[in-house]
Length: 211
Length: 108
Image (cartoon, rainbow over all chains, first blue to last red; front, side, top):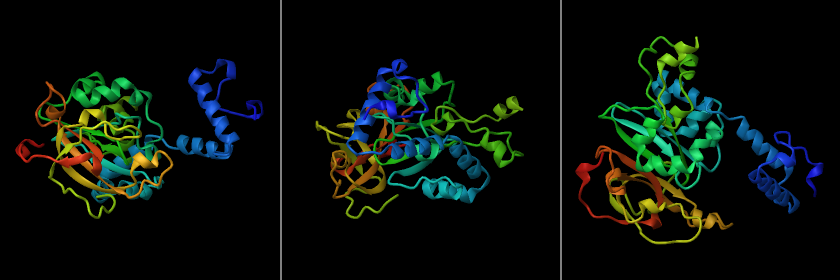
């Protein structure tokens, strides 16, 4: 099967493609040719991933901030809590949420590859997959967080979570001070993608800047 | 616990050590943990063994999976942060052996 009959709407012409994209496309064509995967299955998976963004995580966090019962369920059964908000993370992968407190700040990494709670948050940022982040955040987390602009209080301990196996981790950040009167939607807007990984924390001022 | 893990060899709080062996294939135990002392933070449940699953096998029998905690200072020589800093990683049972008791008071 030649690729001339294909339509890849998200893609640049063949002569402008990177070597990586060419390689992926060649593998994809072989898988199709051998009947391992169909074009429809590939497109369904692309759509599945593109329908998910970190804003799902922001909604989970905002709900947990306003509803203590939901927070308990999020921490004890993330998959079920996500389903309550209409986020379907069903499948063989399990999820866990780790809570930031005055005592501990959590940060997530996958040193072996790029494990990430994709069924909830979609695709990870590129830096999450970089060798620099994966190798450094386990060994010198405070320096790495500082480079992200996150300076933690001296007495705050760090817990790094290396998601190496069957669980994918999300961080439940602390609700910023000065957000007492905010609605759940306003709170969700404070939650950044990186704060769900632990390389950032939500700030009340961000919303103020946007208004 | 996320899934049942009947017959799990270790319980929360147990001291463990990651086996320091070389193994080819789809191994989910990173080198930086090998030979290092830690503790069982949580029994996560039994999961198909990725070392077989990755090559078209069924991964059976399911293998107990644990969240294992390490003091950062035990992982990295000359670690610059406070002694309470910790790292948690999920490790399958066949990669763990009983550790020596001691140092529990230093766990975060």
